[in-house]
Length: 526
Image (tube, rainbow, N blue to C red; front, side, top):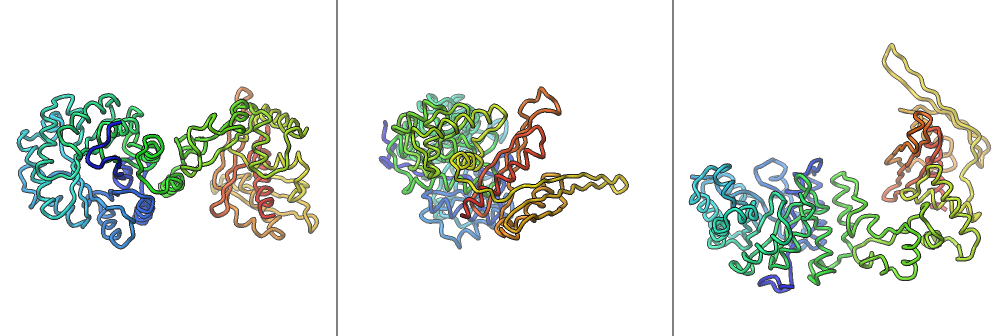
């Protein structure tokens, strides 16, 4: 591997989650969110954190003012903007002034390196485009800033007219730019092209090249790594790959690739990677991608019996790295594809006393396969799976005994309103309890009635929240008589668990999943 430029075997990480990442559909952060993310990224080991575009909106300007009061570890904060406007000196350009008002040690500006953009979008002469780049960089350097120049559409521009594209980099370099960032703005360049072009550019501007890739072809990470092999010393990207269209180079993937695969240390504690990834997802109100490399919940999941048997003997048989090195863990899935190894490893993971030759292993395996043939699915319902194992082992004590439940629905057309009422009768330590509750729907009403019946003896039930509810039709060919699978995700504080219920009756399927949720939590309380 070619060592990347003047910094030998080190690569700097430039995070643009708070700016480029928020251009992705559905991604938005409050001011407090941005501060918290910046602190988390700084503590994790990012070298640069791009906070936004001063002047584009009040929130970004407020962020820069607030960020100065917070500890970002060793990370430098960067403000982002464009080169000066045509025909206006940088010293008199309002947008350049706002970049300086942000008072960040680093300023990143972008300019045009593709003739098509200069002629059709900016509509300025080539000489003026070069002057806009040079004047902007020179002025910002004169004001004591570290300046990164983002060469927008560089690879498209290079393939169109290499000399023109290189001239724009020369203008920035001669004006004092610290890093020349080659941008694959449209995300359409192939890794071999990235490597070839970056190598040519690095030879001309040694030790000054950065890379900024987009993921439109699914190659954002591959292209960034190709650029590093060709000499780039800085990678720009976003956490979890957020960004416009299909997103940016995903830092949660590129960081472990650099550190574990290419021997280029970029962060001190890589075991925090999954934690930071999920932290950003949480503030973005995004469900974590379960199939994300390294950090996804299925990244080290094993389902097929042969695979599970192999990893029970040596994890390296089907795991390319130690899961704990990125803060993740091995996950043994149990399904109709399972073998005895799946059951034994899952039991060991749960601390249950199950031995290899125990007949219960076969009984559990047959039970799971029978249930899955009826529509059950335990991969996202670990809590229901643990309860099933405990019942088969005779280690389960029910939280209560059900006598019966009833749901009714009433619609008042005169006031265009409806209500659901559920009555639940259970037997627990105090004898029979019958409670009635209203809800937005039958499941909500059942949940409320059951909680009311149990929380006298079990006050902790009031702290449990139902955070997700999914319904799946198992055999749609039967129409309205189809079996229904209900998955429920429950949480108490930071702890989350999934349960499942299946029935021809959606209310019963929901009831089964609800009961498993409370039974599981009672087990944990014990």
